[in-house]
Amino acid sequence: MTRVMTRVREFFHEITIGKSVLILLMPLISILIDLKGLIFALCLMITIDLITGIIKYYHGKNVKFNIFKVNSLLLIQSELLRCTLKKCYEYGFLFIVALIIDLLVFEGMAVSLVGKEFIIPEFALIIPIGIETWSIFENIEGVSGNNLFKKLVSFLPEKIQKIFSDANN
Image 1 (cartoon, rainbow, N blue to C red):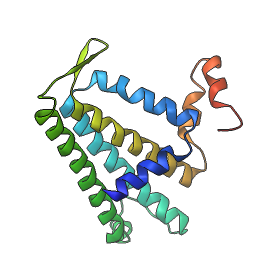
Image 2 (spheres, one colour):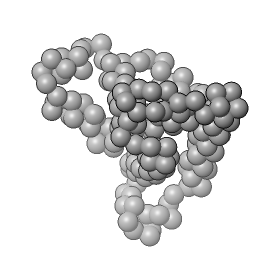
Image 3 (spheres, one colour):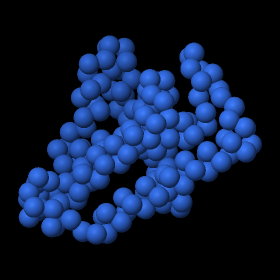
Image 4 (tube, rainbow, N blue to C red):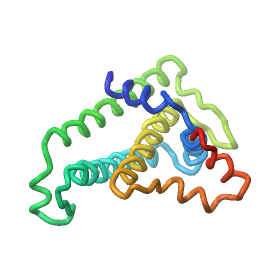
């Protein structure tokens, strides 16, 4: 649990407008998805983060790595995989605790937002999905030198683009 808390602290340590927008978008995304969909989304994000993290790790060591070649797969260190499994365990623990609190304390009470009913475990899954999303962007930036999120911002209206072009961020 301490590793999750450390990552959460690191994520929020220097909150930027970009991170704030991502956090604000997560509840909007959850409107379209139910609890099973959020669990699937979290698993998908963890898998993508694992793959991009491995590629970033070997890119930093100047080792040619191709995820689709067997020789490259043999380079993967078990320590990196254990970190991912530990992360899955911690996120799972967070979900189970949220589920227990929801059932025992709030007795399955749902919160109505934007015409949809939400339970606490759904909100508990949104945080790790946001963390994993940001981690994927960091991994991509570590390999390519480009931040994909910043490029996607260019498709937004000019007024919103000005928010992200602030020199402090």
